[in-house]
Image (cartoon, rainbow, N blue to C red):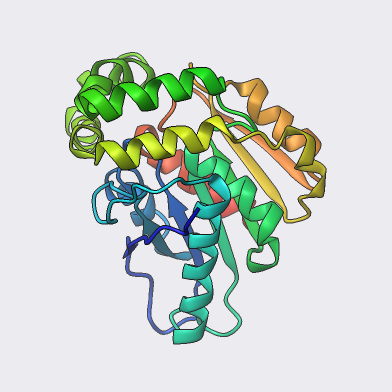
Length: 266
């Protein structure tokens, strides 16, 4: 396994004359960080520089066709954080936080296990300590590698958003769905295989970094119980539920997610 290359994107412009904390964010499988987190980031300019990164083969990040694990993705994020410390992009004295959705919620938990010293707080969002079943992820990987990511669009549209969201916010929804349609099929397949091998339920007690688990009340992929399980089993955990949200909380209710991150990462 090799650590993938990832592309970092500044998602907002916080005031330059203050020492501002830094929030790194990641998007879910099939989505792009700008489309998912862009509006939430604008609601956080008073508190955070927000830096996002795209999954391999999604939007700005190059494809990655080698075998991949969630630990490899976490290592890539840790390398990014360390490099930003070295270049001065993270000001001395600034606190550093992480928030990730779905597969990036898995990355968030892995960061807590492997690189917790880099972060003052971590928010796994719309995720679980185990997501789905390994056989289903392997089947999806095989399908997408043969037929491409457009095969996932209809099912994802049904799972990703709460009822009525696509009609109410068509631009936000279609932006994410276009990223899915255009994602590199081989990278997507490797990410599915990474999820097939991810299960940290028995290791949550090792995480000492404060955890804020945020779930959508209408999420069909990762339930409210999945979020509660995380919060109850890490050393310092809090569980939050966003009403009327399914699997893409930062794009469905950006103001609410921003306020939770602002207050819980106080």
